Amino acid sequence: MKYLVLLLLLGALCGCEREATPQEATATARRTIDQADAIQKDSQKRVQENDALTSGK
Image 1 (cartoon, rainbow, N blue to C red):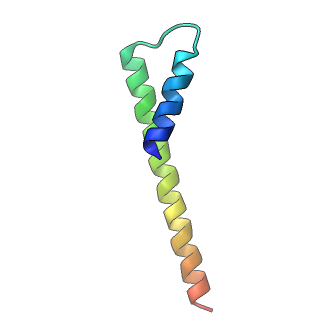
Image 2 (cartoon, rainbow, N blue to C red):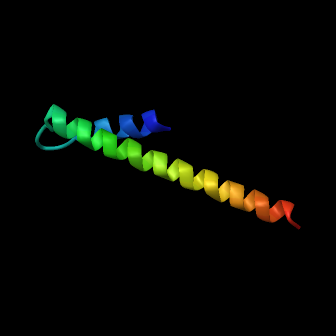
């Protein structure tokens, strides 16, 4: 999933009016990957909470 987000990000950067510097592109990619990681962790937490609720019944 990280790589899909990164590819989408790179595609969006290519469509910008001005090209991003390598440093800007790297920083944006890192932020995007960090956000993807946070979403994945949140999803895993929700699945665990849901499993705990359903198994407790």
